[in-house]
Length: 453
Image 1 (tube, rainbow, N blue to C red):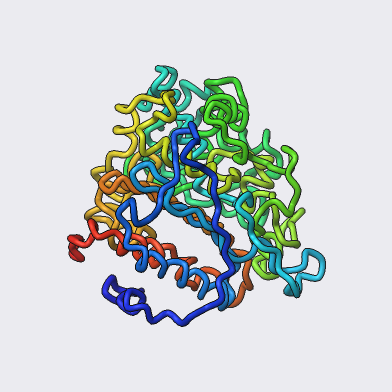
Image 2 (cartoon, helix red, strand yellow):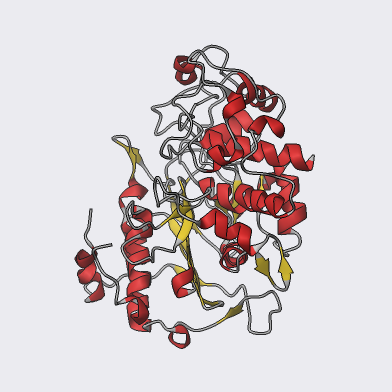
């Protein structure tokens, strides 16, 4: 783990010169009425020379084997950087061998957001429903999902769990029950294997045991957001993807944010590829119907793909930098964008407030934290910063103190898998924090930061 002062080597400009494989994008113009406009780094408070070190670092990583990335920086409502780097596909879908000419990322390329789905689909929907008075966080889950009943063998009962328990990851669920894999899920109990959405819902409602009592410190679990997505569906009588499309994405004029993009006119080449050998972890994992080729425009997450038909509250959303600019600015604006309000500011204030038990958590959101620092956000994010990460290689950071947004979308899992690790995870770009730190270091106003945070 590097220390904050360990980045001095980058600030001193000692990154070797590299050939840049990057494209500057222009999603917004100064004549755009969408609510965001473009600006230059220098005019919006950045030291351009220091900010250029971000390009050097990402391109150095790509030269050394990192697949690809997209970076968005918004400051004071101005999009000051929107850049894609590297490749959307590096390995032949048939032979799995490295391509002689890897396919470059484009500004329109979609990325698998993974767990950022939790925020920009499910949490957004939940905040909207709370604002409309259709959802009370302190009501039991079974008020909204009547089927959610019964106790497990340890007398942990579903009727006691509230919606807030799910949002705080304190309902007591295990992090990752692999419903899709009969050998992996068997040790949780009988009858939990499912590669069918209806069956998975039934398991969540009546069969899945708890791993802990409710109300303890947060224990991050995908199950919590699987259930939250189903709550949205029960209240709205719409599928989760239909709800967010109708109530959020269409009104925001988003064109590139979808679950199951292949069902919406996209082709595989339109998406940044994720794992090279499907879900096999380099051939080390096997289960029924496992995918074995590079994944493009199909959600990587196994629970979402195999057990939830690609649409789940915890994973499955795809988007690009342009649409993510709008979604993150909507959050920074406390629920309003381009003259329209999507949820009440007071509701968002409630959702982004730190938990007393662990201030790196809020309601769904992750926070920079003061006592329990959230490592992916680096050393310079203020204690007000919030956002999320995604397993495929995505991070969003929204920092109200500096009126700053950072979105880093990568396909870091599109890399060799050896000794239990994807190569992409080992690069600075794949760790997120080194890139985020460089961005903050290019803002003179952050330099009063204390490393004792």
